[in-house]
Length: 238
Image (cartoon, rainbow, N blue to C red; front, top):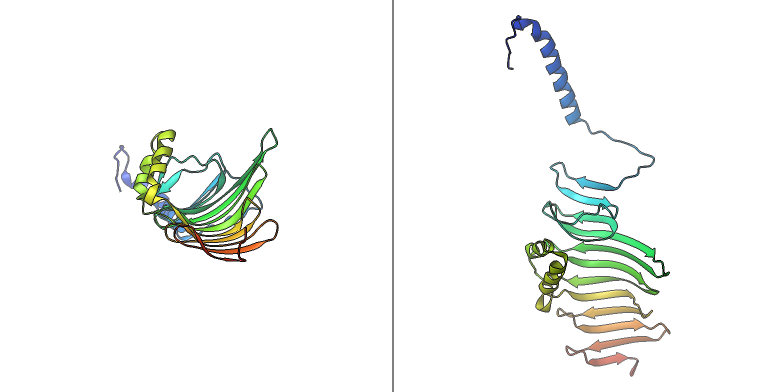
């Protein structure tokens, strides 16, 4: 403790300062050891950040205006996502999935609606997707499994820091050719009103297609690497 001489006997300050020190220690220690729990009947909030004791972010629930960009190992990069929803983060504070949703009708009466739940690979993009969408009267909904390319996330974050047009162009370049994400399986309702199960190989080529058309006709097709039908049921199905 630092004593300051002010012309009065120091000893006269000891009882007062000692009491303050003891009280402060009790308050700090009791606060550190207790876990306070709050209860609400209703709460309005714009954004909630769920964090670990060391500050590592694990989940964000946000409105559209405050929705975060891409967060990698705790650092945020610009990402224009015009939606409300929830983002998940791994133990290192890197995004690894999320839930977004929205819908509206414009002045011309055109409707758009979407819901999207996805989970990402480590330091990569989504590998399992539950998706529903409506665009101008056309609807689809399904679950999809994807093989994501080994594109370093550092290249993605670098692209996101460019201008919007440059960034989009760079991302298209990064995820093209041999680095294009490949769908491996899909099950759902398609825009043409058919229900379908589609299985692809590692190059994203259709190999087994099972569907029921909008008119109720069922088909099953097996394809080779060139996309040629090698077997189908019923024969000659359209």
